Amino acid sequence: MAQLFTRDTQAIFWNNNKTAIQRMLDYDYTIKREKPSVVAIVAPTSGNKFDKFFYGPDEVMIPLFKTTSDAKAAQPQADVLLNFASFRTAYDVTMEALNIGGFSSIMITAEGIPERLARGMNEYARSKNVTVIGPATVGAIAPGAFKIANIGGTIENIVQSKLHRAGSCGLVTRSGGLFNEISNIISINADGIAEGVAIGGDRFVGSVFIDNLLRMQANHEVKYMLLLGEVGGTEEYKVIEAIKDGKLTKPIIAWCIGTIAKHYDSGVQFGHAGASANDDKETAESKNDAMRLAGIHVPGSFNDLPEIISAVYHDLHAQGKIEDTKEPSLNLVPKSRRSKEFICTISDERGEEAHYCGYPISSVATPDTGFTIGDVMSILWFKKRYPRWAVDFLETVLKTVADHGPAVSGAHNAKVTARAGKDVISSLIAGLLTIGPRFGGAIDGAAKYFKYANDKNLSPKEFLAYMKKEGIPIPGIGHRIKSLKNPDLRVESLKKFAKEYFPSTPLLDYALTVEQLITSKKENLILNVDGTIGILMIDMWRSLSYKDEEIDVFIDAGALNAFFILGRSIGFIGHILDEKRLAMPMYRHSMDDILYDVQKAEEL
Image 1 (cartoon, rainbow, N blue to C red):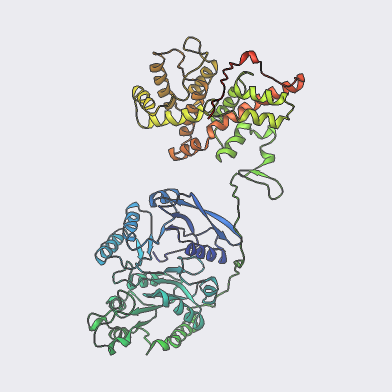
Image 2 (tube, one colour; image 1 turned 120 degrees about the vertical axis):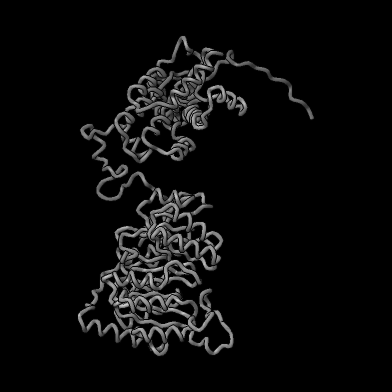
């Protein structure tokens, strides 16, 4: 793989490090990427479903997931994992990602992963052909395409260091801190870098110098390379061997930091865990001498690096191997941005015409468009356009529950309020406020408990025992008037529709076995209209390939009861208009219909 990242590369971010994520998105916006580079965040302890970030002057919503596997399943195209877990967790997170598969590279920021674990982790990654950057790294960058987290610093520093577009140098360093400094030096003395990697400061890192240099050798954007090592380790000698074997042919500039170590009597660690020489070969001076003998451009000191970089760059430019770089146009990240208070994902009234979930209203409102009220419900309520059988079922439900006479509590309240002289809206609200666990609310309850019983593979007898133990009457079961001998024709119609048009009805079939058992005790304990609707909604969603987690969200939100509310509003309004049309007087309940049992109040 000649290039680690492209303008299409997308990443999953492990741990919601908002500052680092925002810097990545600001970079994306600056270089005019077509799509954000971060598409999912793994936040195991968060209860939120998404987090908002700025993308230029606007905001984007990035989904949050509890696990890496969930994030990867939702965003399979994301092949980079940015592991910002602590050193206690980073190993497990990396190993899990390697086992999940589908990642081409993994970056690990944590410093101090136990060396035994790090070596095993890196070896396992190599067997999976996954490039590990780190541990103890700030990441990597493909200028003009993709950058990891905080590498390169602020947007101002990135543009100043020419990291906003590709140059000619392939940069590999151990030090993340010096990465920014070297990038700036290259930008001043040459045309910037084509790719840069800070491999990490721990003694055992995933991809070492030779891995990255061999990749850059194959990358036609890279014309020469710069290696910045440090005291400790022997990875630089692998580079020397590759040059001798003819595997590395592009010009290489190199320097190992830590030449001052020779002035100390004993081994000294210079910052990084790997920055300590255990024998003469690991000293910075020995490695610099060996690289110089191999034909690598090694300066006399760090201060001479700019001169060497300039000389190599201008020599290649004179040979025609490097062409002048064109500066691309950039977006400017606003200095002042304000987060939005509300979010809407179903409709948009901006522009020439308002839209329902991406459909212009003109394309759904008139009969010739083929859209029905069920279609509008499916896209505005559930953000999906349902197939015709499902849309027809939604409309069947609305028509079925539209009215059930004036005696039920909701209609009664609406009529009483209308007779008190209140308007349609007030009277409708009075009726709607009656809807709850005992009136209409059985739709949600039936869906919840029958789904639970079916998911747990409870037999009808076990289900009855469970509900009895919970002290809850089974929602959706029972009718005051109807029975096995006198069935509710609404229920019969719904069952007939489902059997004819649904792909399958497993939950309805289960509910009917429960009904068969419970009606053997009492004939009116039949599946009623609320229960039938709730159960069939579950069968409908499962036939439409909804996940159980999505269905549970609908149930918990009261979405099923919403069908009863919408449908019954039709009937309530009818009763209200009926009262207005008849000019009915103020209602007062008959005293003959009230049992009075009023005792004298107890004196304290």
